[in-house]
Length: 233
Image 1 (cartoon, rainbow, N blue to C red):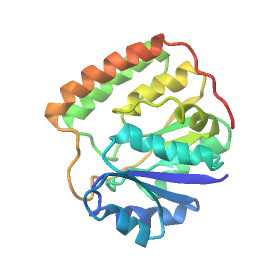
Image 2 (image 1 turned 90 degrees about the vertical axis):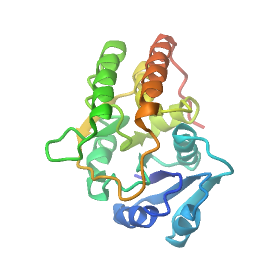
Image 3 (image 1 turned 90 degrees about the horizontal axis):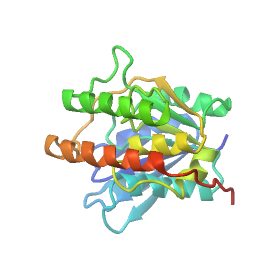
């Protein structure tokens, strides 16, 4: 398979070198989508030999991931991995999310942090994750234990769909509904993760309440929509 690793990055100069080093053994191409960073994220990524696409200003995680998805789809990749630029995802876990796509068992694979001994979420994120788990099960009939995980593998059908339909803001949960509504096979596998290497998450406790309300409303609206047409170029 021709596979692209998509690294969405905003001001990750302190992490991006280690992240790219961790990815070099996986055997595919590496694309850093620089989301309007004001630090040296893009320059460091280029010096490490990664492909770099830069936004002129900050679009947020949804627009950044979709840029990578569009690149993968338009350039004929069979699959793409979402691999965050903060160092939490581990290169030695990639095969766990890629293998089900290679075997044709899934179109979208989510790496779950719920494995004992793995990365532990804070209490706020854990509660939010459980609420989203219940909503996804009710709206889409899918039991996803860690719906906010950004460690994912997108198969070709998923790339085709998400290159056209992908939410701009906080997409991880809502896109599960989109995939399920369009008949794609969604799977979750346990993976190990680590804590952020440096810096801080952009989602603060104050933003969490807004995040919960917005995503919940978006999930309900998305579940009520009809199927989209998945097209190959």
